Length: 419
Image (tube, rainbow, N blue to C red; front, top):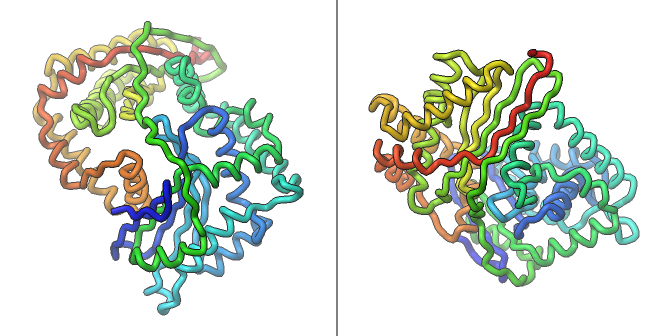
């Protein structure tokens, strides 16, 4: 059960002896928009590489080495309408280093890198800021060379044309980032620290009492937090499409469908099984019939996002097969809607989903992510309950899911040298 350390500040301790390490994350969470998302991406780039106490990447690496090879990272996440800036560190369990305690040292280290950034004249130190901003801009430019990523972003911009936050890459918007200054970003960061909801999650062989004691020095203050919506319910619209030509050998055909089912709401587990059967597993109908049986795609898969009610299909194809691939994808949906799939395949999909869920129990990161998400949702579903819900899904349930799927956007990146 999460413990409230101050208004809008929560500590969630997951005591377990399953791992040889202790993982701690500190998440600063707020409703998202394009500007804030871009601010956080640049902040993550800066704060992962320098702080007042560790002004260079070398000094930071030396500190981590002294902590028996501890890890440290800063990243940005987006769940539905909420975005977060995450600081994370992992240390080895005390039992494996002769009883020396690293917990208090990790807590102090995280406090230092979060609350004591590398500052000069009320702005982020200019040389470090400029270097990291240039690195980020160069990385954003290089992403366009990854054509699978590029096609996915183009589809997002089509599908979410009226919701820029979702249309923007999780790496931020280059134009917005380019306009950020060292001074403006420091002001933004101070406001983030003072106003964002904070979730601290620790998983490992630790006690809540020890964590509360170690966090006393942080002097975490109350903040005004309103219950914010997590789920984005995009209205259904007319189907839109876009075709773009580039000198490629492999074309990309990506499609976005509206599936009005949302995370942990009624029918959510049915949608998971449907997606697993459609294209979300290696035994799915897209994989077998589009890729293997008919050899129409280099890859073909689907992904369901329960935070936006979106079903995404990604394929890599020869340019000449565009019409055939579109037709056979539509055939797979029709087949599921009409119950034209075997009991054997259905059972294999259910078993595959359950195996995947149970394997996540062996991941410290997955435990931490789920605990953070549960706190955002104010609800918890145990692994056993999750499995029970999946097992309750019937063939008829999956057929009904297929009938709710509506194509909304198609993006085709055509390989011009495939003419």
